[in-house]
Length: 151
Image 1 (cartoon, rainbow, N blue to C red):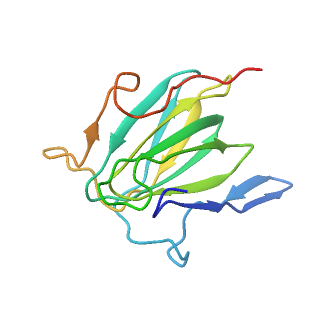
Image 2 (cartoon, rainbow, N blue to C red):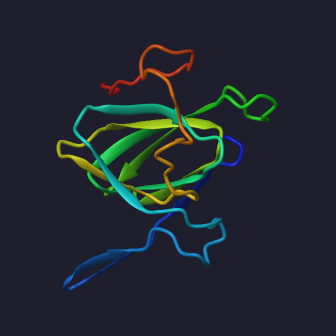
């Protein structure tokens, strides 16, 4: 697994009224600090990738639908440099993925319905100077192909 990447199984508590899922608590061992919380969605088959941050750590969970998340370690000198990881997140696998700074990441909508993703980054978004570097999802040097695996 990519150095610094952390995955935790999320606790889902169902009852007669519905369910509650804890995503990130300040007493979790992986909690660093709070920047903001935001929700984003991804339509079926759409790829939202690649991007990385120089300062912030992302804490990502998919709370509706399913996504396939891929990560690439392009950090010079990292013990896992050039490693690619892939995870499926969502209603069938409720996990939190903590993405350290410097790791390219993104995802593809895998469910038939719109996927809803919650991110709790360690830094608030700076509209004047965003801490974000982007690559084209399909035309880049990352050894990963965004497609559904059939068979």
